[in-house]
Length: 422
Image 1 (cartoon, rainbow, N blue to C red):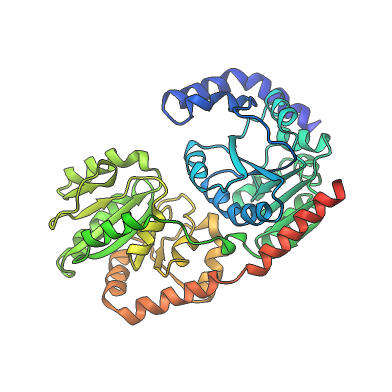
Image 2: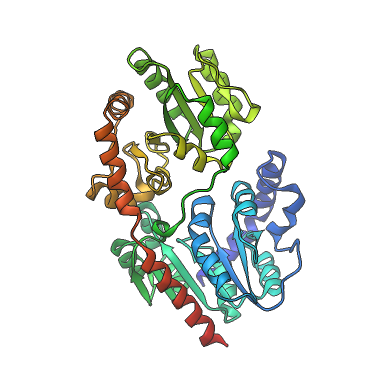
């Protein structure tokens, strides 16, 4: 009944969905050459043999799947892996990061027709959802074809939990179709069980198992030379409204820190021109990486508005502020910076990463700042006091070194499920 209602609403909304997708296409947010994938049409041949399908919502979830994907491919040379995501940014990143034997397609929109087209072509032997991206038709149609489904690294925010509780039997109907659910935390496991999950385990966060972000040696050497005499800190994955706060911090510290350079890496690099323009209007000397501007002696802010280079910048700096947290965006992934020996600060809203924050806080591995004034004070302290900075970074590193056993457990669970379906 619930699925019929959902599909009825989708049918009514279908003109608006198509219009929305076309607007995204016009705005460059969809890949024009692969647009038909959004309607379940393949853009490449299906490889022969065993195919495991991973679905991840966006960049963070896709990256957390990479260690699993690499191990699964290494264990069986006749195995292939299909990765689906929904954003152009994640697709571009996956083209560079996926190992040989794995490939990317865009996830189809959640209409019965698009999903059916997608599944009938790819016919995976196993479907793995990363975290908790729940699309009713995608789940229902996969289950109908008796394709085993696992949910890995499941998490559920307060808002999502409250929303799914109000759907009555829909959540239970969907979650019970998963053969196994691995939850990031006890809280996430309890919520999944409450909503209808059956075989649920809380084993820790798979993101702890991820390798350090990659970087290019030549670019690292060039950047190192460009900033060799500068005192540098990074505001990473910033959202609209945070760049102005970071700029005010730079201004407050400039008189106290000689040769200060602030690097801003916006969460959405496409905002680079807009950010640069506003900072220049405010009187800052800005160098924009996407335009290959050099870092001059009087450059105030280096705008790292490129995709896939955070691994480079985390290696260049010791002090990082994690964006999406001084505005209400739920924060960004702290583990990538923690894995590369950074001393990390974040704002009050880290609601998308509550379990990770709790683990790091319990080990005194991060610092919360509540506004621009606190950000300026703590940034200055971290940049000025080596022992304070080093201790914070070491405590964070201790947390992210856990988790190797989890990876092995999940690989075994996946391969046991594949054996059961043979």
